[in-house]
Structures are given as C-alpha cells and as structure tokens.
Image (cartoon, rainbow, N blue to C red; front, side):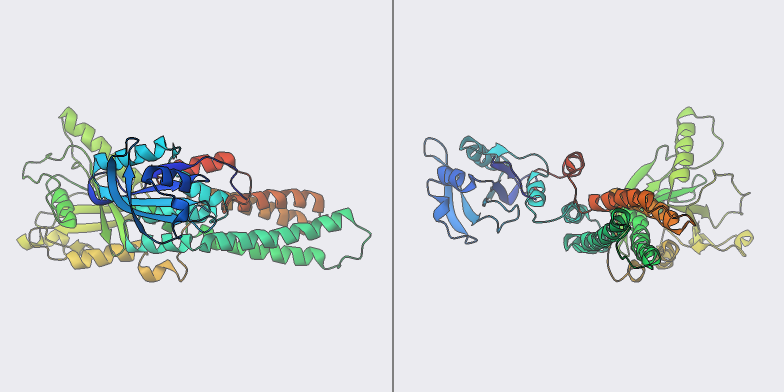
Length: 449
C-alpha cells in the first residue's frame, strides 16, 4: 500500500508553549526543495541523517531562526517520504514564523495525525502501531508505556495478521472443496477445518480477555470515594494526590459537586472521584450533588466507601445497585475505634497521620487483580476498536463452526461467515481499504504526529 498524495506537508511537532527547543517537520516529495528555499541552501546536498546548522530566512533575506536541520531520504524515514526536520529555538513567535516561512516556500499545513497516516499508507507501520503512538504519548503509568511499546513493536498486528493468514488458508481450502467437488480432497477436511477454526477462536478469546486491561491503561480505573458527610472523603483524596485539591471542613455538606483527579498506584491509573456526602438534605444544591454521587456510584469500576471509625457503626445506607469492586475504609483510626466496628472487615486508616495507607494501596491493587505480574508476558491490551472487530470475527467464526458441525454441513454458508470474519480481522492492522476508518483514527492525533 503506497500513498498517492503528491503534496508536501509541514507542522510544528513539539508541544505548544515556550521551551528551549522546538521541532518543525516537513514531509513529501518537495520537502528538500522547500527546506532549501527557506534556508538559502540546497537541502538535497545535505548528507542524510547528519545534523547541519542552518538559518531560516524570510523573503527579504532576514534571519528568522538559527538552528539544526536534519534530512531523511525516503523511503528511509518515519513517513516513508523525503522528510526534513528543523530544530530551532522554542519561542512561540519564532516557531510560528519559521513554520510560516516553510509554508510560503510551498508546503501546506499538516492535518492532525497526517504524518502517521502517511507512514501507514506507505507501509511503514500498520494501524495498531499507529494507534500505539498515541497510546505512548498519552500513557500515564509505566504499565501503559509498556503496553504502548508492545503495540509499537507490532505485537498485536502480528498476532491478528497471523490469525487472518490462517483463516485465509482455511477459506481457500473450503472454497476449493465447494468449487471442485469432484477433486480428490481429503475426507477429513471438515474435522480439520473445525480444528483450525477452534485455534483461531482461541487466539481471539485471548486477545479479547485483554480489553478490560486496555481500557484501564488508557482511561484509568474509575474510583469513586463515597460515604456519609464528614467521614474524610476529601481528606483521603488530598492524601492520595499529595496536595490540597479538595476543601476539607468540619461542616457537613462542604463537598457539593464531584471532583476528579488521576493518580498512579502501582502502575495502575486511578481516576479518583470525590463525591458529596450522602444524607437527607433540604438544600437544593446539596441534593443535586447527592444525586451526582448516586450516578457516579452506578458508573464506577472501584468503590471506596469511607466511614468514621470513631463513631458508632451506622445503619447500612441504601446505595444504588452496582457491579464494581467495593472496599470499606474506616478513617480517623487515630481517634480510637468504636466498639461497634470490632468485627467489621475493613481497611483502617488515618488521613491525619497517614497510618494504614500502605495497606490501603496493597488492598486496592489486590482487589483490581492488575499488578504487573497479572499483566502477562506479552503486554497486549486491545482498545475498543480492536474489541469490536475481534467480537465480530468471533461471532462469524462461531457461526461457520456450527454450519460445519451440523449433520447437513453447509460449506457455502460457512464460507460467507469466514469471509466476514476475515474482513473483521483485517480491519485491526488495516489490511483492507478502510478510508473512513483511517479518518476517524488519525483525526484523534495531535498535529505534527
């Protein structure tokens, strides 16, 4: 697959804002010519991959910036095209002016993700590797980085491509059986095909089992702190974060809206949500906060229920039904524990002196079953797009298997299901003409990537 676009694109590839160095990337058939016009020297004469000092000048010859230019000849570049990268000073204005000069010399402004899209179209990476770039950029924990690197190395693409290649052979065998019924095809064909389809289903099931891990790595574990007013929910949030994010007060009902922050706990991103205390309230604003708490509980992955250990154990509050993992935390243990909690299975902590926080961290990790050791030897974690394609492939393969297992086997109908499964698997690494899909994926990238 090769790109047919003859345009040359340019964009700032470094983060927005002021810094020591900025990076501008140019890619396309005229990249070296454009760089030569802007720098007053022929970039085509620069030795590939050798950094060279150059000055970018405006149309009147005035210096805009003085930096380093590196030339990459296609196809030996990130995009597979001729590429020039200019590293200059990281001021906002000077970087914009430098980019403007490259655009004046013939480049057009790159769209979000266009460099990575060209790399895909030129066969430098598959779709899963391209998605791995964004996963790496947005990774919030070490485990997320590990999973992104695995995807960048093509682990997921190789496994799905291998399954697709196997399925292609099965389909070819089945269609030969359909088209040439008089040929001498092995009488054990049906049993062998079923066995091979079972093998592909096993691979798919293994990958589908990583969907929750992938969602957690990319989005975090939605962790809701809830309980009655004044039990220390906001104090616990602040202790987790290491700074005063939420207002802490002895006045009940201080927290009236949800507060959300992300922390890294043993490599697991926890998306902490501090909620309003649940109680009967005539205050209209506080009541709205309590209703939001109820909705947060319904959507949670992990529930941390906070109670005051120094007060008598209350009647069990009625909370909405949920399927999330639930941990009870008894706070204010420094004040002494009321006898009514004696037989209660809970994690005892003190937000005042930070007692019990090591035990709390370990219990959360254990409850989530998401320690590094649980992550598996191969850090493959599929995303929602992969999950949808794999689920569709699994449905079609199961249907084909049933047709081949039936007493009156129907190879023609089974072949239709196998073709559908083949297309679904091909969507994952991008082995099909999926223009609309590409637009959705690469539009989520940052400009310059």
